[in-house]
Image 1 (cartoon, rainbow, N blue to C red):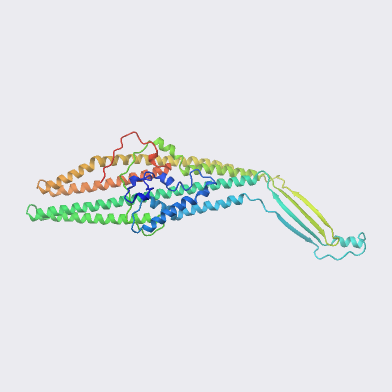
Image 2 (image 1 turned 90 degrees about the vertical axis):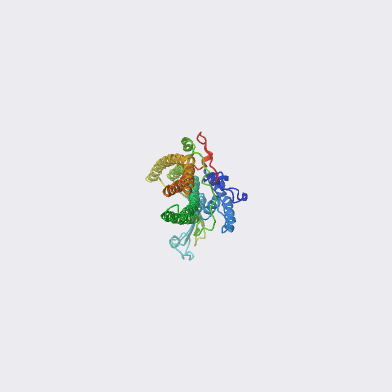
Length: 483
């Protein structure tokens, strides 16, 4: 079961196994039409509510039937995308940065200053206006001054600040997309655990039925006097062991179901079972083709966008080295004389000492740091891809050997031993040993399938695309027999 195996067409019915659903990350990317495109910009962020509404509608449709319905991978992903609190926090951060962008583009407010000197001294002049007494009285008369100040930003400060805020919005979009893909990968991984646990429980129940048949066969031979009663005791012990294994499989399935439900913030799982087929596999593509796709990972795009953001912040710091201009205009009112005088002024700082040198140097260093982080991110993703690729090749070979060689031989050996024991040609130990070998290899096969699907899930997370969108290795891909 892979990310590409999401059921995009619920109307076809729950009977569809995940082999009908051929897209994983593209269903992550196509499931909701990529909630935020990988190359995010400030304009497309406003498109988010529509796909989220689609997810909400699908989740509500599932919720109304979840108590009696089965769960597809698409159901699980939609519920997680809608209700996971981690993703909700990233979405709110994006909305917050929209406000920061709006604020960055606003003009500075003007300032209104009112000043009153010698308040209350408004008596009329004594004597003539040019007399000594009148002149001295005029000096201390009430003066009312009203000025309006406006800061004018020079050097393109507002444009640089707005651009930096827009790039910050895009950076938040990359963060959101990276978290969204991480959550989708987590849901797919736990969904695989549920499918594997369901299959192990089925095998345990089948093994218990086989063990019960063996007990019946041995009991008949004991009652017929053909074998000693101790053999019946031995096979009953084996039957008890299969019951323990069945109970353990049930507990494992219960734990996996709870872990899956917790991803959409639900304590109790209400679905009946998870729908999927672990045996729907895609052969691993060539490594170099996968490495090219790593550059499309949201983490890589985020690192690239971070460099752009740091360069935008450097531009902001460089514009701050240019002084701003403050202009003012107003009027002075003479209370006693009754006259009003207009005033105007211009003020500009002299950049003699502080030319924002320190902040500009810091911004340059942070650009270099962002470039190094970008290289480190690409290296880390390629390293993880190389490790996952080697593991998936090993898992593919293991599945092929188990499916084509070991399991057919183990099944045939058990049936031969069972028939031979009924005819008295083989002993009980040979029969029990063939039964044990068959069960162990069936469990190994399920584990190998689940491991392969998890590795496919990891690779699709790293390349941010379905693995079957990459050209497969030039080899024959054997088909899996249907149960």
